[in-house]
Image 1 (cartoon, rainbow, N blue to C red):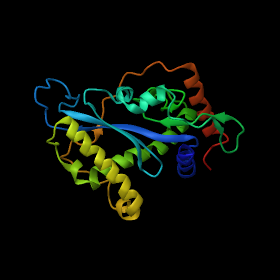
Image 2: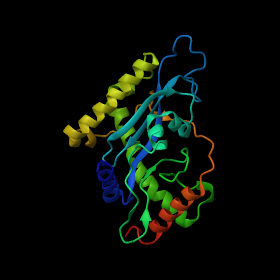
Image 3: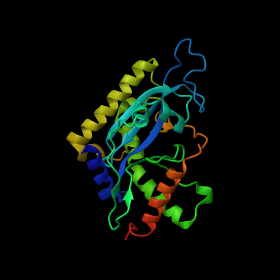
Length: 246
């Protein structure tokens, strides 16, 4: 039932129906762990662990995975998470495919991510920007509009919780990961208990000196399955026809 409540929120707030959450990953800068060599050394030239999160339409984190080596790419980090393990084992108990408003066609429930993630039957990503037709641009807009919730959640976390305004976190990776996870739980708690006060201030003003919560390196696109491509095309057709914004 909780998955369907999440999907309902995405549909009502962003008109992206059957969406179960928005995925993204960020670097968390840490001090160089002793005797670590090039471990945790990311493509931006500093040491970090990775925070990967799935956010709902209310900008709450419904899944986080933190502590992966900062060397991994944005899409690649997904494969190291408990979320991916459960997804592969079909243990997330996703809802059965269902119809969307104004159509009798059946659509699967999906997660949404940016270009770095691999397209899958339950994971939608944008069409490549360099080769989009107008319909595909509409799909990309609708996906980006819904996916903005996770970027907003990270932006709020970075500017409202002082821990992320530090240039670097002076803890070894496991302790840093525990603190980051705690901050994510605090973020959810404040949204639930003090939503108006917590979300309405000017969180978009970011500290310029901080290297916290920066984007990961994009990964090479993997070859998606034919079914995954067909599902994305089906959503694309819907957004340009029955599900077109009025």
